[in-house]
Length: 471
Image 1 (cartoon, rainbow, N blue to C red):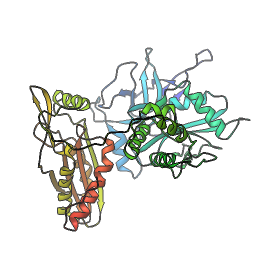
Image 2: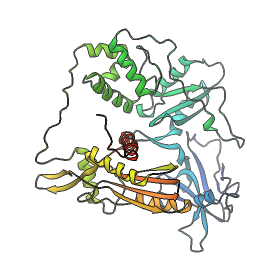
Image 3: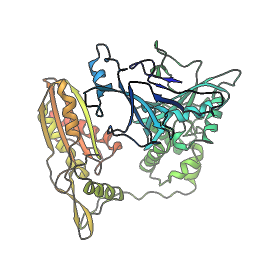
């Protein structure tokens, strides 16, 4: 077995196999480096990892190419300085995940870009593909992450069925059920699509962009029979990003997962004033079934009413964890949530700054500081606060470095708001807004309502008025 990326020679490692060697499963040994070549297995900090621990393979030596023709940016990204050489030579970042075996050989584990994180879980796409390929009906398989609906990442599997295998939705559903016997729920593709052949680019690699989007529809849609089912169908469709859902359609077969289930239960609580446990959706995943459970006497949620805030305001459990980590890890920005927006066209900077401060008044968590006391850590909600807003003029070549520097800012939560903003002026009609919030005050789901409110406030301030918020 010979191993060598195009950016090196045809061969930088070799491993001899015999017919008596045991099968290696989905992995393969790529052996030892050839003469005049160094192979490093490093972590994300470019530090060597111990034998048996997976890392990324970096290749150094006389075998390296000079770089990519007329692509200096990509060359600088993939060909980097070798920290283990005193002569200033370079090493190539291969993107391959490997580990050292006990006998000194390297074992190939897959690509680093095949490891994804969805809903808090790190997932090896190759492991799902290997499980699909174990089915004798599957000739080829690949799994990718799609985000056809903004904010809703889904695993989708694509298979080429071989021989006289059955086709249609029944065959792909059978494959998904077979996967459920060997993989945990969070690794199951939301859909499996049968195609005639995997699309390839001219260089023979998989063309992921050409893979068709899955269609989450039922062959026959049964209409709702009453107002409750009509409301539930609308909520199912809203959360799943579909135009229409029938009362017999299964929420999870239409692309739903645990995170969307949480969102659906929240929308049912808000829209129908019904308190429903998430477990109920797993037990009754269709509108018809769920409506029957709701009719069985679910508690009506008590209306929320504002109350006077007095005394000690404790931290939530999640905030306690983040507060502890913030105190424990000095100068750590690991829990910053930065988001950069490119703004094209004329920008009213004064209106934008006022709109950002309007966000502080609307969202208390953005004007909250934290303090330790006799009763433990507590939140202090400020009545009035002003957002830190810094304007920086720079060109496009400097922007990336500025963004990295600002993203590494450390919040002092005891006396500083957990949000900051920077506005980078690239030209008179092109700007980049970097808004950074500490995770103790926000999460990924909060971005959408936050920027919705920012748009409302900016439009109002441009017209010289105070924003009128919807409840």
